[in-house]
Image (tube, rainbow, N blue to C red):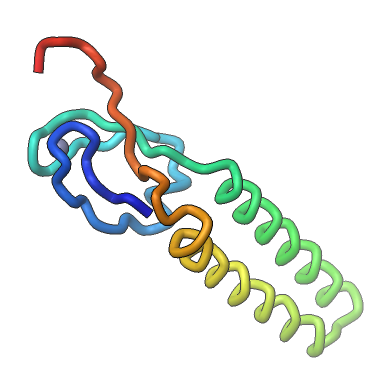
Length: 108
Ligand SMILES: [Zn+2]
């Protein structure tokens, strides 16, 4: 994953997931104060949604059947889902730019 600012190329580092899936998709670069946009890959969105749906379904079944085993499976699914994203970032999305510029204008 490429975490550099698209304007000044400063490395902004890794943002946590709560910021990534927040509805406010724009952040400000701490180096050049440019407003830049989070650039989500479709695979990331799919993994987050599928993982969330899986955990909800398993939790409902665990509650329904009062099953301790299913609770463990739900926790396992949560752990797998949480580790899938960083794995994806290190492999398939290694060169994917995390941020894109919102200001293509000449005045910068
Ligand atoms: Zn910048």
